Amino acid sequence: MRRIMFICHGNICRSPMAEFIMKELVRREGREEEFVISSCAVSTEELGNGIYPPARAELERRGIPCGRHRAVQLSRKDYGSYDMFIVMDKSNLRRARDILGGDPEGKLSMLMTHAGISRDVSDPWYSRRFDVAFEDILQGCEGLLRETEG
Image (cartoon, rainbow, N blue to C red; front, side, top):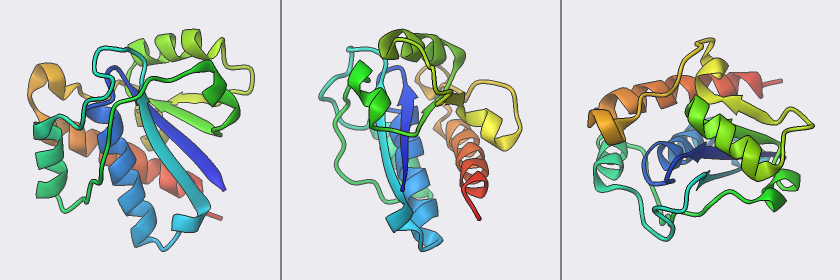
């Protein structure tokens, strides 16, 4: 069982998009039983809020089902519960390390590195380009899924 936590700033755009994209990719491969996939925030700004409507609309437009979601914050105790913490940008990486109290087991990584790309996932909160964020996240999740094969 691989336990994956996707992380972004508020847990209303990029990390829930990654959660639901990854869940769908895993479902399409018939590998649902191999994974636990969640998402969370490094901030407290959006706690309890659902997926931002334009993010939900982009997922729906692309045929990615998204269930119920409420923003939650990463906590230190999560470190023992997950195998991988996948962040969307360098700021998330710094904050996640702070919250988790470090990363002694090397569980933290940036999503785009799983696609062989060294950059942040585009942030649609500022760009309003949920389509671009979707493509980045899809690319990263496909790379991550390939890494788990075999």
